[in-house]
Image 1 (cartoon, one colour):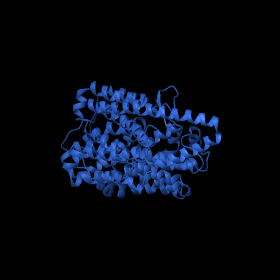
Image 2 (cartoon, helix red, strand yellow):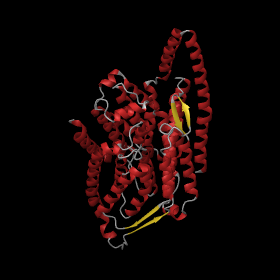
Image 3 (cartoon, rainbow, N blue to C red):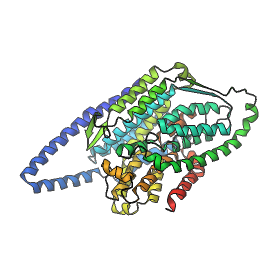
Image 4 (tube, rainbow, N blue to C red):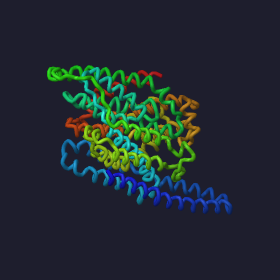
Length: 501
């Protein structure tokens, strides 16, 4: 763990000290030259500016074939554990990092595009700092439930987890409750238990607050009011959870009967025990630090780059929590949870590959959506399905931002303007609040379609596998669960809230 945190801090240090200072110096030099030119010859200044924009656009355009490393990584994530498990288990870090380096180097040395990799690095550091701190802090909390596993008990825990995910995030709720959920069903734990946990707790549940899921938090940082998600998303949240809970109840009622006779012999006290409760304070520190964003609070220190402010104080706090919450954790809770770092290690390496290789895919989608042809296609229906489908195969947070930017651009607004984002959320553009609702729900709900749609999915899968549960492969997850169970719920949400409006 020390080596992991040290590596992240070193990576952050390189980003903070070297890249930023160098680029800032170049930017300042270019600004001074342009100012001088403007004073001497305004016409030359305008011409130079136009030339620079054309030059930048030319060098920043990614070719379509550069999406191949991302597609290859997704295919290997899907097929590796199934067809070449030994190779994949020992080499997935090399594969993920290698493909990411290939794309990043192409951006840096062929496209002459520093902006994309720097933004991807900043987003990755923010992403992994949050996930690591929540994972490690919650690992020191042991929840023991001495109660018989029944369909109703399981449904209750899943719904409680869906509520909690809005308070401590889908990652925090997933890491806090997945082990108690597994222990509750220790006599009859099956893959469908874990899949529905991913559906309800790790994704759909967290759609009511910006804390709930990363896409909504990014929207809040851009200017969407904090309580906007609660006001607009709760009807669809209730409907989706009601359908999923009902389907799970009947599946669990049927599948759980196999071990009923065996379980009846056990005497239960129906008591609830909590060990390591002080780690809730560490979780509170993480949640509080989430709001230390320099784009929202002026006095928070930041790194200025490419017209944006990048946070670093928040990430330092989160990584510090990751270290100290483990160092001072209750060892009984650590041992009771069978806590180890393999799940966060797997997520860290896999998402290095995803963040590094998905840049061309996001860029191509974003550019098309912002083009006149793409803008003509933008409606609440296309935003729902477009955001949703891509959120299932890309990380849902940057997908959310790309489609929000496209929706705003189609109405002459800019996502970089906080006032415009707020106006867009408050329906001061044509049907803009409705379009934002479509983007928000799709990004969160469709994040459950695959293991890689949302960060907690992979972590829950990894913890389940370490507990001896045989989880479906990447495609098995989609074919056996996402398409027959989750997709109909997503279609119902579309029919009720969007299709006929």
